[in-house]
Length: 114
Image (cartoon, rainbow, N blue to C red):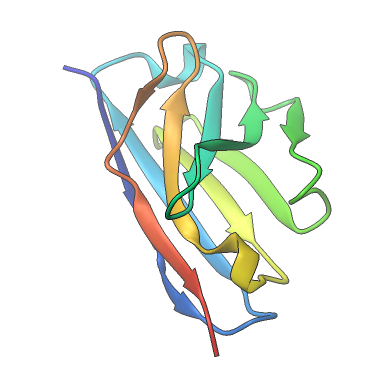
């Protein structure tokens, strides 16, 4: 069974940083491109970032480019997202997504507030 379990979310002040993680199991993680998607209350899902299977190519939404960094450790079956210079507009539930079939985890809440 494919499982994606996000963790690391929390409450952070504007301008702060956070690293969230996604632990993958039930499939050969190193073979698949992965993404992060977020959803704020009352809004549709927003794609945030993508990384290829080997971790050699990354892409970002304009709204997070230069502030967020996606990475992966294929030996640990784990996907990461480093969030820097956070603003209240980054408040959302963040989901990791297995790109080929859009399987996603339960999400982790990131709240940016003073």
